[in-house]
Length: 284
Image 1 (tube, rainbow, N blue to C red):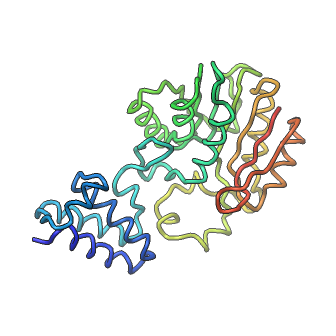
Image 2 (image 1 turned 30 degrees about the vertical axis):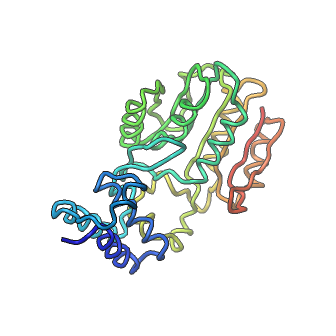
Image 3 (image 1 turned 90 degrees about the horizontal axis):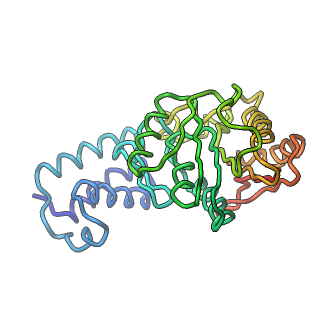
């Protein structure tokens, strides 16, 4: 039987055919931790132990799925996000590090405040409203999502962490009648913002597996979600309330202008850790 070290090396070698070496190595270790039920330290200390036949078969099956470009998070059924381990599958986008940056900004700006009322729009897996509910003193957190499948995943994640999110199953282009005007402190949204023309430059693991409904906007109307959410936020936020968007880096100035036109008193563009314009935040 192969050792843990040999199994990880073989897995890494196989995945290097379609992934960078550092990515393949990280995935190999993550899969080994998952299948062998070991944390990083335990895995390191057990490199010379033998891998059982059942575990070897499980790792082989995962390898085959990854070689078809299926995202690792879907294969394992989970994704790490802001100290949460969320359930994910093909019904929801895989949470991204830049979305964690948005959450971190909201948390740092509102830490110490009490009774916050929050709405997240286009919630997907629920990563943003769940992380905010887990890290802030909130009186009410809403999560709005049009996809029934995505809502099922979000509800499962909320149940896992016993977080009382009120889920709204509706299209953002419909009126939101269940929230009183000017009653919210915070609105967040990571809406679809990838242009259809950008598909040609996307990796297969995203393009072939992640839900297009949550990714793409028409090339002819790239700001449609931002325009609509800005209108809603101007009605739902109280004076001084804050709106946070994750954006396509190409449209920071345009999104900022949309918010000022919608009646916000301030709007600013924030770069992510890679220097890309990724967040726009505004104050009503």
